[in-house]
Image (cartoon, rainbow, N blue to C red):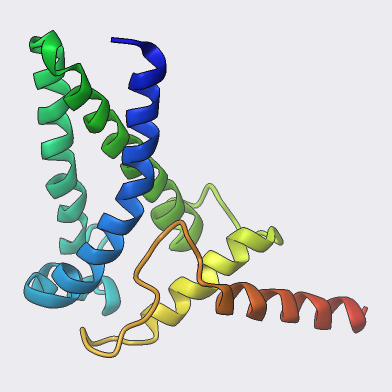
Length: 161
């Protein structure tokens, strides 16, 4: 195994996970597993949500792949995929739980244009409280219409200062 191949697989897996996340969010979370995701759109009391089970759902195969690659060196590439999924899960947690929803109050409002764009896109996703008619199902990639909205708001704010 060459470490560049290993790192390449981790990075490609990380990138692919954005597509997997979009598809899962659109067709699984807003589809047949809506009962697990619904409380994320209709916040109830308490810190935990049924939606948090999706972290476990993605963590189990990731841990299994890491374990397989650890126990059987011929499957080093499976371990790399597992670490790619894990890295995306960590990024998702940081962006979704800490930056966007601020479930842990370590991150406050930011003027960073990327952070403002992902927060706006997610806000537009949450304006739909039912499983139908949703938009913006990704996490790390932001559609240009949200970038444009944030840039326009920023320009208007600078003009009025």
